[in-house]
Image 1 (cartoon, rainbow, N blue to C red):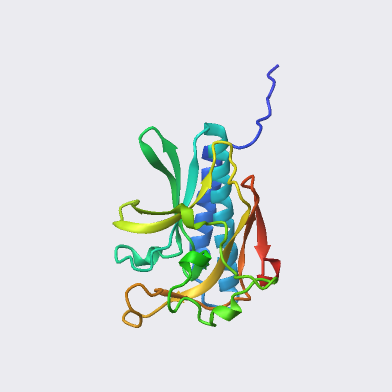
Image 2: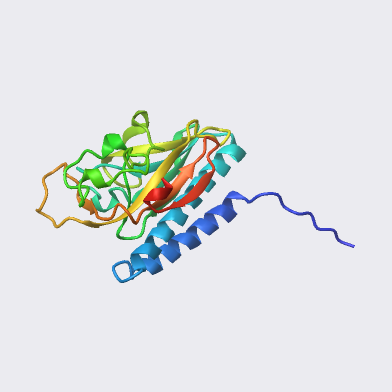
Length: 229
């Protein structure tokens, strides 16, 4: 008689498969992002995508014993791929030859990562004015999981040199300091309506935000609405 042994945890392949399915769902739902509740659905899809990327990063780091990082494009002046701004995420693992890409993904159209404070001081980014983008405790509503010492300028996945910020996972799957990633809806600014270096997008609703709280151990928890931050 054959016996079956239960698997513990998930393989990287299984996690990447889940991530791919979530990305397809986000793409399918994004077509309705401007109609009724479609923007809320796109936000939820983006939240699931980021949560899955973080889970894959943590798991891969812990199982491989190698550093892993999640990169976000934060370069408003990039003319190579302006559509990447605050929407394009790349997962990489460090090996003997440098950083190797594991996965990459765009957030659904109309959804962006609210940048950390040091990358948010660009003209035109907040449609309602900076004073509306505050947490319940009065501090700035920003993605503070990213830190200024994690900024890098590199040519990644076929683009020219662009500015990125990374969330770094140790070989144990930890990130060191707990933090948050904030997701918001927005829209591209019309070409010619802003100067080089100004934000090419405008975030438009400080109340309807979603995101994640990430523990020092790299475990994500979902957040919904400004009051939850």
